Image (cartoon, rainbow, N blue to C red; front, side, top):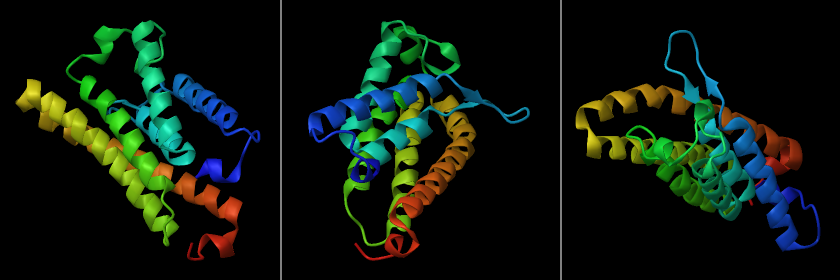
Length: 190
């Protein structure tokens, strides 16, 4: 979506590199942050940033930036949530499925976001919730494979956080599209 409105250069390859650097910067800058509300379990904004990159820049940049983010974290940069790092962090029972989910959601959400639709707001809503559902599903399935008793507890805890992140992403994306396209053009059939 975003790449349809802003081009940094005339070269598509250079635009891809610039978009990749921006999205990777967002992941590295915001990935370690945890948000907590009261006594609730803190949650990461990582899934929100992964889907922002995929929906706004497309599946190529979204997937590549998520893949590079995971690679850099495994290589030793302190960029995972709560400033963790390393392969041991990625392959723990509560993390591994979510990282696979980030990659799958970046591919799927980015692909669906690039398809022109008649109802942009409904499409954006569906893509945000589809991406978060895929991340939650793969994360829960990985936990279930190793420890079935803990899987449902983690899915229940993450469900409300993912709903909040999906709603926030939807609001920001729709507001951006309405601003860029104008009110009349936003509601026109593509």
